[in-house]
Length: 381
Image (cartoon, rainbow, N blue to C red):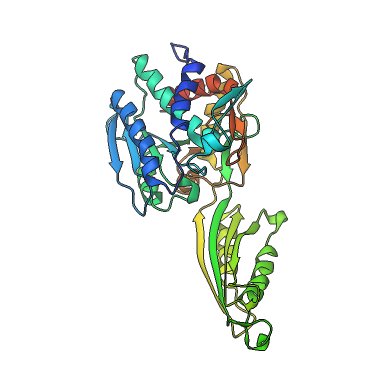
């Protein structure tokens, strides 16, 4: 059984909500690095006020900075890594255009509130709460804030993996699922780009001279769609298609973006090879495919199961039943779980509408989730 706290956490859900609102109203679309850094500045100052040690890595390729903060206690030994991302999929102006901050009954709305500013703030609040109580956790805690998770963490993955290797546990503040379930497994994610290069010609007078890039890409799309295998848990999707220069022109170029989801490393390798191995049927059209697996599968192992059981016992003390699930979406937890580090994901607020125009959290989830965070930080050893 986990160690019982001598002080039952007394948290203020309205104070939590006020803090979440401040973070949500700083809009942070992934590709707007300067906008993301406004929130990075806010988080850095808040952490400094709590005595945290600060390490800020400048962003690159137009993305925001990577912020790492660490509790002033615990030394440099292995501890707990809390992973959050500050970017969202919503463009600047979303809070005015389609999802203004508001509370309607138990639902609280705002762009990025569910995925995942509420969860990121809950973890920060738990740290703040412990500082206010004059308590130190058995293990040092490092909070890491990622600026471009929504597109696969291309500039931060190496730092995430480097940091994770220094820790005993990883806790990820992604949103809860389906009524408060946390995540103990995710599919691996692959992203690919395919281009076909044909020969342009007038579609009326010289049709026979053309070699259609769109026609060849249509064959590629059908081949990729045909790789979906629900029995094996594999899905493929061509989500973006661009091609052609005019309705009366045989297309000389076509471009698509492909998403792959796979449950195991073996299937990841198999399907990556299948997609990259596609060839053009028409010898006069050139096909190029690039990309690969950008998030490895996150599979529940003994370490993750043990960590989940610990969290479940804590939540039973608090007064609610914690359940877990496997999901098809990727997160930075995929990187850490693949390294063999016990990782719990989906520890954020409950709600619905990730990436949607009605994104929302449930106010009623804030107090129990905050208590869960406090107890996790003060009992993991």
